[in-house]
Image (cartoon, rainbow, N blue to C red; front, top):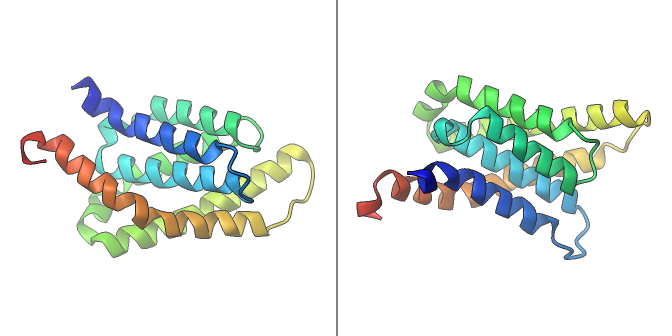
Length: 163
């Protein structure tokens, strides 16, 4: 039971750590941010008991410590995303994959804009907008790639005898 409840957090942390590895890719902070957004959204929508706000808070701290954003920005963004996903789960779950993906793309754009705004305010500098646009597009593009294995894992966690 503990493994089932902890699976979403462990998978998300591993994805964020993988994205933080020194591969020499440009845009690695945006990759971390995109993976965290997609994972928190999916698990908050389909298994909110396995992704409670305290875990989302801890994940946000991990993303902040590994990334280049000021401490607390990703915590606020991931908690807001979690709140929206759990609040809208009854509507979104009935809509099908395309509705969920569109909702996530809009939320990712809002999250990237909020990250840009918070970082600009906390650093007292006007930052370029292109990295925020890249992060939003990357998150929207990564969501289907992560949602498919997450959905399979979720079904096997719910009914392990059918896996």
